Length: 232
Image (cartoon, rainbow, N blue to C red; front, side, top):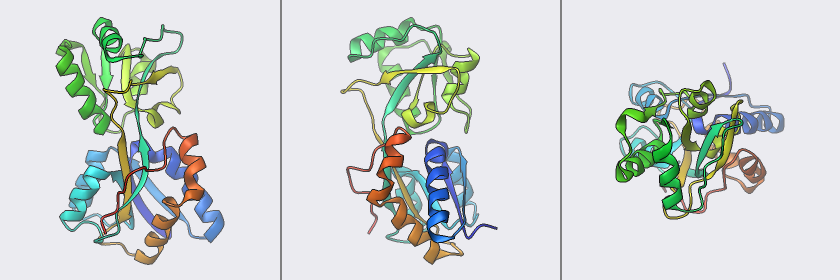
């Protein structure tokens, strides 16, 4: 078993894989972080599974901390991710310069995909506001990237965290949602209440939130947090 065991949502899986590898090189401490759908991750934590470190959207982390599933005060902002729009490779990219043209592109699409994560909650509200045909709105199953549905041709246009689209073959990122309808998700990390390696987890949290990890965050379509995510 790894020295430090964790769980995260899918949005941060590529970034965490890179940083975990770097951390092991630096410290000799092996890190194994399982990435699953955020809803499933929170359910497993609440069901009593033991994890040293947890990395989820900050809203979910706040609730876990409040309910005693994280070590009090261990929650810290990890990275921020904006919502992007993607289409199948070779398809015409929609104009995303403002809300009006974005709405027009979405309403003219044969089908629209969104996720089960925080970006999906925001996008679904937009779609309802715009009066999108519910029959053409498709939610990706938990743990399945929206980009996978796009590459398969199951949806014409899709919305998800930018970081989720970067590693998916067969798609092209059209751009970010424009200001005014954009929603940036803060992801946070923290120490599990039942951590078997609390000291190691706290050291890893310190590394993940340090400026030396910023370059990796930018590489994976995320940003260092601009607002506090600390529970202390």
